[in-house]
Image (cartoon, rainbow, N blue to C red; front, side):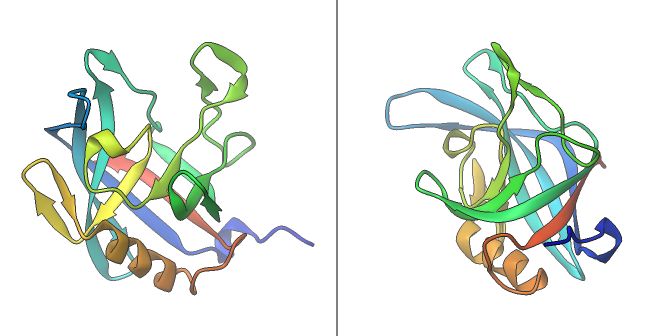
Length: 160
């Protein structure tokens, strides 16, 4: 099967804001997230991205354009897997495992402690995260032509 040209793929934009929020998991571990906005066609959604767990910085996507593929995992359910290598991959090594690429996804989550280097969409901001993340993710799937394992889109990361 021929790979789809990046020019033919839908493009979703993440704009980071530098505004931070904090959430705590059930074990008392604190995570720090950064707010942002996702632009999906003519729709703006809110976003949250974990940047720290305790005092440890998380690996994050750099500014750039990345190819993403719809996938489903047992851990986070349906979402987008962000390509790790190649021209449109992030090419960031997994901390402590330089032969492997870090794993980044766009998936539903409402709080920074529910993320691990991933981005979650939301319909609004909560004091420590985003609301209705699953519904916001559904809007992204719809914009991309509907849910389908293997469907692709481009993800562009920038700063406000």
